[in-house]
Amino acid sequence: AQSVTQPDIHITVSEGASLELRCNYSYGATPYLFWYVQSPGQGLQLLLKYFSGDTLVQGIKGFEAEFKRSQSSFNLRKPSVHWSDAAEYFCAVQTGANNLFFGTGTRLTVIP
Amino acid sequence: DGGITQSPKYLFRKEGQNVTLSCEQNLNHDAMYWYRQDPGQGLRLIYYSQIVNDFQKGDIAEGYSVSREKKESFPLTVTSAQKNPTAFYLCASSGVRFGGEQYFGPGTRLTVT
Image (cartoon, rainbow over all chains, first blue to last red; front, side, top):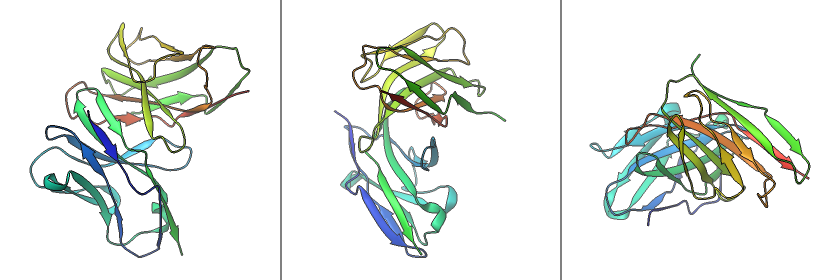
């Protein structure tokens, strides 16, 4: 069965510091992978997605993610965090046309 | 502007009452979805529809019902049979092909007392 694990419930970083949010998935084949961001009380916005090809994908707002098949991971990174990046981040795996499974999310706090 | 609208933003109901949440999209997407979000549990799929007049249960469909009479609209009814209806509800839409991004509405927070 497919699953997505985000091991960090809450992360706090200083503004300007680098960020890495972890995501591990379980799926028998190569999945389609997504990172979404959610501001408080809002819907989700797509940051980036991986389907195939180059394992390092670039997204919006300066985010990138690297797909590592050997580790079943799809970690999200940003070299320098801004206060406006404070939000909740969700990793998701798609295993069929309408089957999108979400992790439980990582809440990011940015301190000045 | 293309997008998904959900109304209302906040909804309050008494226990035992049915309530319907609205979701409309003008993205010309064939597929639409309803998710429930609870703190610490991520998003869980309630129902989805790939085409007008057809829909399928997701992981937590009990106590919910939907209809898809128009391509643009996918209302969700939270019935009195839903034991814990208080939650944040998100509607999404996408194309039907594998790998299609899901676009989300702003959500409706339902509180039942």
